[in-house]
Image 1 (cartoon, rainbow, N blue to C red):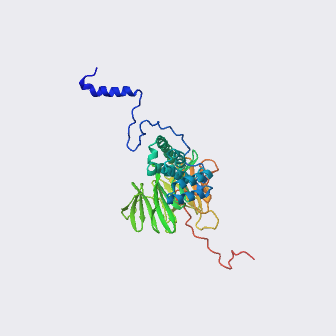
Image 2: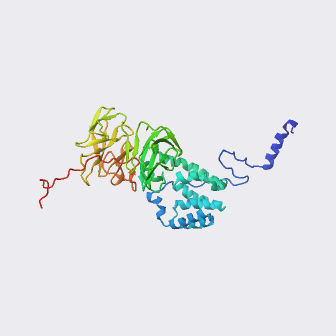
Image 3: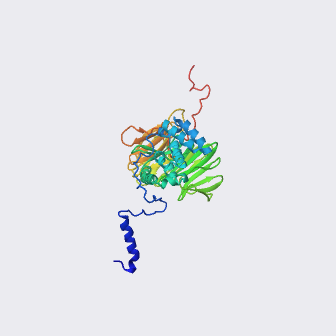
Length: 447
């Protein structure tokens, strides 16, 4: 029996009884679409491997699907979305891993109302380049209706789960340059993840912890962008004019000295004026013709008799007071010195001679034991070298042959196929060319 005060409660109970086992409607979280009443529960989408197994997998613009995709782009510009569907489908038939075509096909199907055909191409694009298309899909106006469907809800959940996988891979990946762009290479998988999308215009980069500034050069102009490895996002490169430019890390992103002014580049891509004076600490200097030099000096707990080029005949390790040298006339390039993660070793590039002999090695990658000061040479190069610790017992070395992983113990190294450089620029020898032999001197060969 219901008393008057409980009439509304009784009515509610009657409604529930009439509905039997009807499940309550899902909670509406901000930014999350809720399926219409009576719609099916979103099914779970299977996971796909993120990134690519090889760098060559990112070369779809040179493969069989590109001609049809170019035709689809023409139709996109004309608003012929049915034509886009047709020719993107042709492109993917010729090359199932053409990520540009997969993304555009998902958009075109959404535009034409074929929402049940969006998931597959969208999943292909987002898995292949999560940092670009998974993020873009969640905010693209054309996909709004799709994301409100059960299939769209399932894809959203897949994207959210994949985000954790993606960021975990970036957390321990080696950042390299290849084909004029920046990539993260996960040694454990191994898998490749694209971090910049500049069509091959990246010429230099500056790592600063979990952030990286990159520099592009195209048609005589420089550009600067930022990568946030903790968030997995990259900004587009902003126009920096003809150079020169300087880059230094600041708490909110990067300080950029360009066009005679100081600017603050935030990690969301926004740009604001900043003090003209460059902040203290490591910085990257890039000349108008694209030559880049990373300046790290001074380095904590390391001192040396540095000259104007940052070279020293010896360095002192403050933690053990050991003196580190390389065989004369070799000198240590201070701006390349890096502590190992456990602080038991330091790695650096040594310049081998005062004069550069054509086609002869000019620099060497060297590791010093902090406890003893003993040095061990790992490799040599003609054009230049850069070194970076992968872990306590392994170095990544960039040189004449690209990038290789070199263990401290034992011999042999493993090539990182396709990588041309590390994030940091190469150190090139600051040596003079050999003195020419005077005509008629005793050094002339006999005829």
